[in-house]
Image (cartoon, rainbow, N blue to C red; front, side, top):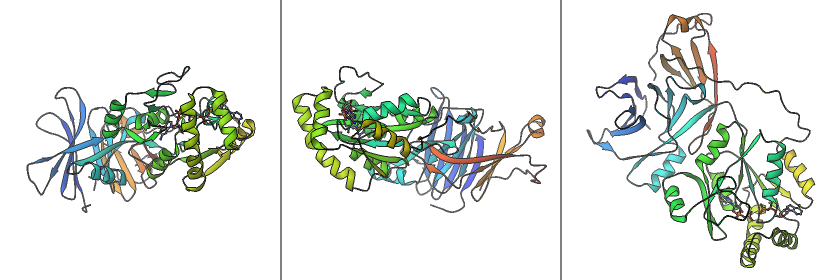
Length: 393
Ligand SMILES: Nc1nc2c(ncn2[C@@H]2O[C@H](COP(=O)(O)OP(=O)(O)O)[C@@H](O)[C@H]2O)c(=O)[nH]1
Ligand SMILES: Nc1ncnc2c1ncn2[C@@H]1O[C@H](COP(=O)(O)OP(=O)(O)O)[C@@H](O)[C@H]1O
């Protein structure tokens, strides 16, 4: 990645689109908002080695909806975007250009430039919880208990699957029941955080499924198999990994049969797979914790302990800290601090007119949210800042 990127902050091009141009190494990233058909944010790349030719680019992830312009600042491997005139919880975005995730996707899309969008989240949300274990061990039961006792704290990541729904299962609640060819296309389009073939059906966690839960301010729970857990471990999504083990194979078989949701053939298939899953789950090093589900009540109490919920007292609700980005601003960067300086009306200048954003502890990222952003609003005059509109560098 080249040194000293040059940034042209928020200029209005002749075609009437609002664009920023960010130069990183040999590449020029034009991030624009266009009204050609409908308003949308678009990334175009020019390679200095091939003057005048636009590079083929694949944009992964959910991108920001269009707004009234934006500013851009280069961080090490991504471009930080501030959307103007946007809600406080939707003004910070990242366009990843050289992160591990992007490099991995680059390998899969040979010959095509890949960039990935990720929304920025102020503060550190609680890590998602991955729960794995063989079919019939009690994962669903434990998760239901947790969601029932703490409805505002946890949200379930609704997976996609190609298996048929069981009697009581609802589409969009228990699973998104999907056709195989549709799911395969969506996997190709980068919409999944992970996917795996389990008991001869395809299962997968969509990026959107996880984001919906974190956007609702809840801690995400994923019920996925060991292969899926391994993929999540390798992804940017930091999570807590818990494996649920049965007390014995006989008891597992009894639970599966008593549940009465599978045909004899499916029960046998699940039991055959269970042995390998238990071996991998207890020995692979993927999981942070192993819980034995012998007595359900005890196992649930142990799960709550792991999640720091034993003796839990409901905390008073405090409003989330949100960034109030000035409509007109300049952006500058000093090490890991981004300084956003209001350049607008006297009214705004009377109040705190500098925002200092700390990007030293970024976590997560595409596919999914970028967490760990911290900020402080400062009155530039009382704090001795001169507030001069530095151009970012
Ligand atoms: N990798 C992956 N596994 C999943 C996902 N959703 C469910 N699974 C796993 O698929 C397996 C079968 O799930 P299901 O058909 O609901 O049967 P059950 O385990 O008997 O309740 C279980 O091990 C689930 O944890 C997913 O999105 N990704
Ligand atoms: N500790 C336990 N003791 C006895 N039965 C249990 C226990 N935990 C769960 N079960 C029962 O076992 C069956 C399978 O549980 P379920 O939550 O559906 O498993 P999974 O989601 O892992 O496939 C259900 O009928 C459930 O009521």
